[in-house]
Structure formats: C-alpha cells, structure tokens
Length: 205
Image 1 (cartoon, one colour):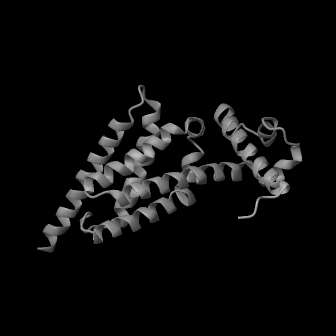
Image 2 (cartoon, one colour):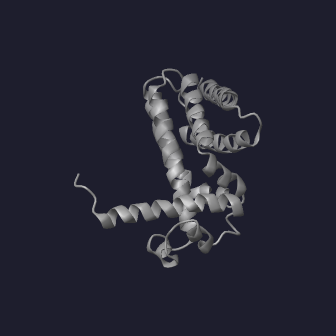
Image 3 (cartoon, one colour):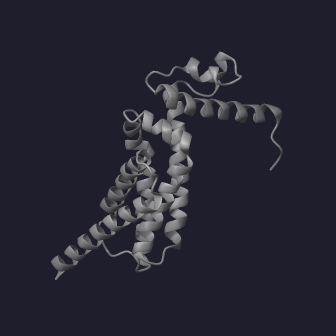
C-alpha cells in the first residue's frame, strides 16, 4: 500500500478527532443537549471543518455506534467459530461482548447517558448486521452438529437482545461482574435453546 499523502492523513486525523470529542460531549452533556459547536470546541479544528466529514450530530453518533457494534461482531464471531460445544458457544459469545463493553469506558458512559436515543438508533441498522452474522454462525455450527436444529433467526434475535440489555445493566452495577453476567446469560440462553429444541423434537414424533 502506498503511503498516505498529507491531505489524507489530515482527513483521517480530523475525522477521528471529531468522533473522539463527540464521545466525550455526548457522555457529559447528553446527546439531546449537545451541539455541534460543543463537539468542535473539544478539537483544534475550525467550526466549519465539522461539515466536511459529517452532516449533523446524529450521523456522528451513528458512526460511533456502528464502529462499536462492528468490533463486537468481529470478536464474537471469532469466539463462536472456536467453540466446540453449545455451552461454550453461548458463553464465549456473551463473555466477548461483555468484555468489550467494559473496555470501552467512555463509549459505555455515552450509551448509558443517552439511553433514550441509543436503543432507538440501535434497533435497526446497528443490530441487524449482528443478528444476520449470528444466524450464519448458528447455521454453520448446526452443520457441525454443535447447535441443535431450531429456529435460528428467533434464537439470534433473542441472544442479541439479551446481550444488549444485560450488558448495559452489568455496567450499572457495582462491582463490575463480567464473568458472572456472561455465565448467567449463557445458562439462560442455553436452557431456553435446549427447551425449544426438545419441544420441536417431541412434536416431530
């Protein structure tokens, strides 16, 4: 790959500066109260520079959430692909997700502060790719004989919803219990999955 030119490097730096400042501002002031001016003031950029990269503050929040969700998906996918049992698949997925929640302290503070806006934005474009990837992974593990035959789309939606809600709840509790939350989520999901799979098998015969 050729080395990036000065203009490209500046563009990357400016974009990242805006995203970093927005995380802090949304966390401290709240998404609704924050303005583009508040974000720009946290950077060394000129006021008009913001609009070279983003049309509004909603697009900034969207990109922050999409980046976070993408990292969760990549890590969770890698963990699931290494699983050799259904229990391991469940636990590793939740544990990976909750660990990243804990690592991203600034982002987590922003999500918690803006609980009214984040679920609304995350309900569609943010979560649908995670659900689709989990469906694909479950089908792949079903072919390996690790996941029982069941409605993988409903299962995936239930798992993503559980990870989202329990992850945010975990961060509000003291002390932070990543392992315990992952164990609870895995046992809860495992019990439901086996019950549904067993019920389907009983109806078949």
